[in-house]
Length: 75
Image 1: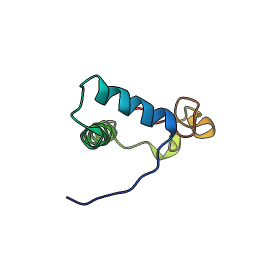
Image 2 (image 1 turned 45 degrees about the vertical axis):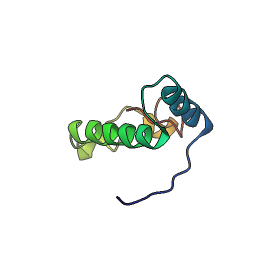
Image 3 (image 1 turned 90 degrees about the vertical axis):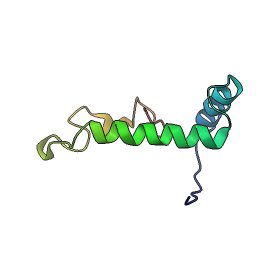
């Protein structure tokens, strides 16, 4: 399996650690793999954006990032 190195914000690392501690995942690697896979599936099912609406579908999120935070991703 290919390996990748990423840097994530502290608040996401804490959330992943909490999920592992609660037993939702066996370990950190499994959590990241599963969450990334879920995010990719969600992205694929959302369908392509209409070119006229722009990358964010005209929601204005391009200025503030996802949910108002530049480094927060919603799965």
